Image 1 (spheres, rainbow, N blue to C red):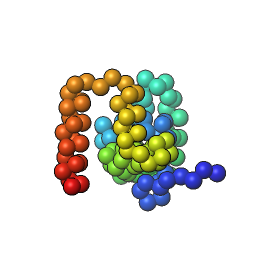
Image 2 (image 1 turned 60 degrees about the vertical axis):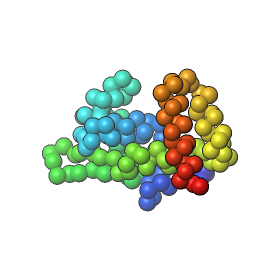
Image 3 (image 1 turned 90 degrees about the vertical axis):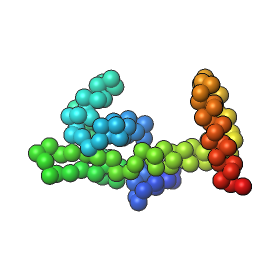
Length: 133
């Protein structure tokens, strides 16, 4: 069995389907299963599938569920930025053997990058360089 990285307490890294639900919750904030299901319509996910997935995510520690209201309200347990950082670290180790250079080159080569994005990346690199020197 593959070893999983535990990002927050005992919560595992989210799967692609779990990440879709997390992205909705980060955008909408605390939401019911019905609200998440409605937002997932482009994926043609059934209501009971969304419900089951969210229940599993709660058991895994990715979501919290409030029972204060008539409908259960779910919320992402881990902030978006922290989840993205943990996924990036995991990808960096698994796919790029820890090489930040190769990760950045891979990301820049994967799809076209606008001039404004490149300028922003240059500014970030300058800040990292100043911080590390």
